[in-house]
Amino acid sequence: MAGQLVEVDGGIMEGGGQILRVSTALSCLLGLPLRVQKIRAGRSTPGLSEVHMRLVTLRLLCFPLLHSLLFGGSRLGIRTRHLRLRIHHCVTMTTTSVCLLMQVSMPCVLFAASPSELRLKGGTNAEMAPQVDYTVMVFKPIVEKFGFQFNCDIKMRGYYPKGGGEVIVRMSPVKQLNPINLTDRGTVTKIYGRSFVAGVLPFKVAKDMAAAAVRCIRKEIRDLYVNIQPVQEPKDQAYGNGNGIIIIAETSTGCLFAGSSLGKRGVNADKVGIEAAEMLLANLRHGGTVDEYLQDQLIIFMALANGVSRIKTGPVTLHTQTAIHFAEQLAKAKFTVKKSEDEEDGSKDTYIIECQGIGMTNPNL
Image (cartoon, rainbow, N blue to C red):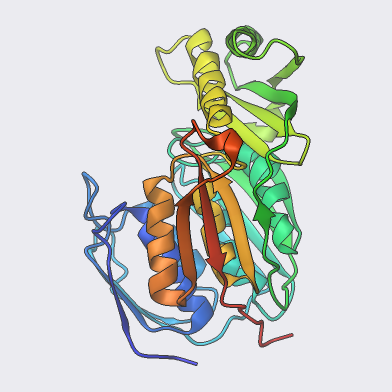
C-alpha cells in the first residue's frame, strides 16, 4: 500500500549510487512514493550516469510510475504499484557492472509473484564494482543464508572498455527472509582463487599474478597451501581483453573473505597479484566474519528479514553506514553498531552490527 511521499537527500553520507540503490529498492518493496534529490552530489560528475539509470530502471520491477529519469539529472520520483516479474532484460551500452545490476535487483525479485529470470549484459569484471567471481564465490553462499537460493549462469565475460558480458540469474520468490547470525569467524582453513587473462593477453600474465599473490600471502600465512589457478578464458566465453585475480579465504565456520584486483594498462602483473593479496590479508586481520565489500551488501536483507540478524565486521565502511541510514529511514528497521566485546577482538577494530528486521512478507505467496 502506498504511503506518504518520502524525500531522500542523495548528497549525504556516501553521496553516490549506494543511496539510489537502497532507496529505490525499498520504495519498490514497501510501496513508498519516493523523491530523490541531489543524486550523486558527492561525486565529481553528479547526477544520473548511464550505469545508475540502468540500475534504477532494472529496480522498477514493480511497474511503477517514474518521473525525471534523465541522463545527468539530479532528481527522480517514483510511485510504486506491485511486483510482477518473470523475465527481465537489461542491456547496457558500456561496462556497467552486471554484478551491481544483479545485486540491486535481487531484493525486489525475492518478493515477486513468480520465479524470475534476469538477463543482464555489461561488464562482468569491472572497476568500482564486485567481480562476477566475487558475486558467485563470496556473496552468493553468504546471502543464501537468509533462506533463498539463486542460480547465476555466466554466459560471457566482458571487460573494460567494451563490456559485452552476459549473465543469466534465476531465482524463486520467498514468503519471508530468515535472520542470520555471523559472529563466529573460526579459523582459516583454505585459501584459493583464480588468476585470469582473456583476449590477446598472454597466459604468462595470469601465472605471474598468481605467483606474486602467493608470495605475498606466504609472508603472513605459512601453514596453508595457497591454491590460485591461472586461467586462460576461452575465446568463445570472453569478450575483449582483460586480466585480473580473486583470492578467497574460507574458515572453519563457513565465513568467506576475498581480495581482488583488475589489470590496467601499464600496470605489471606482479603488482595486480600483490594488490589482491594485500586486500585479502587486510580483511583477515580485523577479526570480523565478512569482508569490507560484503558488509554493506547484507544490510538490506537484514532489514527485510523476520527477526534479529547479527554480523561481525571490521571497520564499518561509509557504504555500510549509508545503507543502514536509509534502511532505517525507509523501512524503519532498527540497527545498532557496537564495538565487539569478545576477548579475542580486544585489540582489533571489530564491530557487531545488529538489526531487528521488519519481517517483510510476500503478499503474493
